Image 1: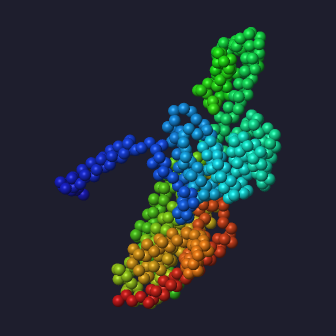
Image 2: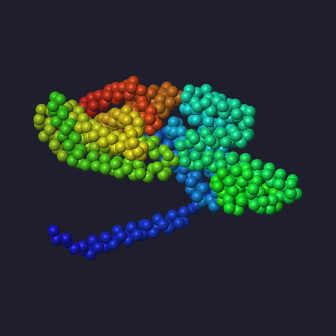
Image 3: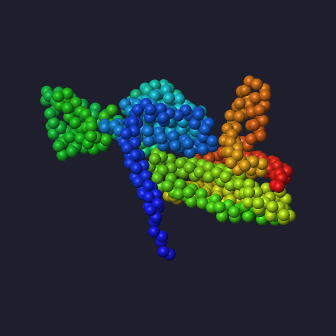
Length: 304
Length: 259
């Protein structure tokens, strides 16, 4: 079939479409480049949602809208973390001013009260931002899912972070009474009451969190906190070694090489310069003026 | 009588297929495929739940649009094209015509829902890299979605038996919205100060279809199954409601003058 040539009018229309599309793309790029930053109050207000209102308006699509709010929460936190120059743990996000995180998680859990991931996220991320909201959302989850022991684990974790070991112990104790609960919940109840502030308790909490977490961010946070607890023990041991050295030599060691033989004898892993390695495999820093040991900021082990 | 209703139903189904109503399945498959591939990066490990929520919600939404926009045209198109005279010149009753048209669209929706349900199950098997119990446990929720669509189709047919397609579509959409607000209607019926208002909201609560009873997408995404008694009661309620709607539609349609 012979194709008909385009008429002048048709060429004009085609050009209009092409030029129009190019213009639209260009304008979109300009608008994106000049949009106010995500931190501005306008952007935050635009995202603000009332959980009860959203629940009413969901028209049977509650689960889908809850998923949307859940993903929105992750994006909200992730975007702010990406905009930060320093390394930060998701359980210490105070500097990020995440004022919308609580309403977003509240909306997700109001729309789908059986959705467990937002509760865990609220327990891990929210306490440093708004501890009352973290507790309220977790208790709301318990009210909707009274048989879920994991929510009691989350509540116990929040109280433990606040150093309210009595409340933490009570949370673990209540959770431990539920059917099908693992035996360590009962053990945690006793440990929380007797030695809530100890590193062993912290190690146990993060180990359980690492094993139970479904969310990769939470899992990674728990892994790093476990490294941190191990590094604290190692640092204490290194400080004791330095103290012994100081008593013997009358001064602090000026470089790790001076302690290398002792470290090797104690089977401590050291690098080529004789410096001991932290649990993530990065050398500890020797601060000779202060006779102190510090974790290298480049290490995976969190400093704070 | 059953043969005549069947012939009208089959014809309505063929007409829906000819009108490319089932093309929405292509869009649905694209949506699910995209979700299965990309949602993992955004969901923090919740892709299975999100696929069920997304798949079943899309099934309901697409179904609602088909029920409304095809449903309101079922009778109107026959009148507009004057083919209704040819139909009624044959030994076909007006009730048979209404029921046949209704069943034809229900058959279209059934095909739609079955293909979509299978799509969601396959997407779940894909993201789980093997058999996933959710692929089976979503089906009671799919049944309840289908029952909800059957009610809406009946409502659309009822409105279209006495009003224009645009108004019928609008009214049916209102019924869909109010049907999901039934808990609020009941709440208003108990909390309002005036007796007349209480009676009004109580009447609306009982007269309008309680579509919230048929909404089981969110629990289904957690692998929860509705109790069989609940599904049975909800289905019986819906069938009774449909019978009432079709009876009313037939009554109105029988009294309608086409001259």
